[in-house]
Image 1 (cartoon, rainbow, N blue to C red):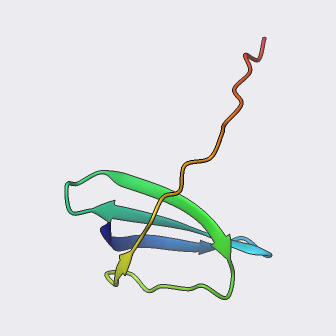
Image 2: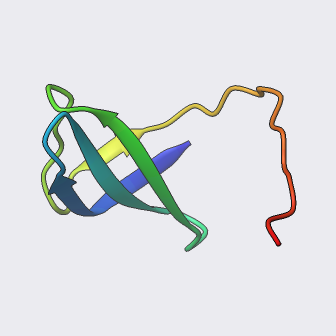
Image 3: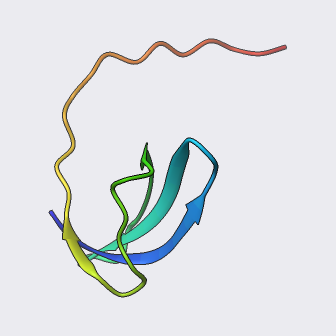
Amino acid sequence: MATVVQESTFLGSVRRTLLRTEGGELLRMQHPVGERAEFGERVGVTIDEVPVAVREVA
């Protein structure tokens, strides 16, 4: 999936990056600090299916 970097924030041991898809959807991802992309850069993203557990918080 082709995306464009909207912002990227350094959080110490990780970075959090906001991406916009060609369809306009926003994706936020957390990744290692060494994987850095600049604002406006086009990057490819793949999303692997993984099981997710959800619990209600009272």
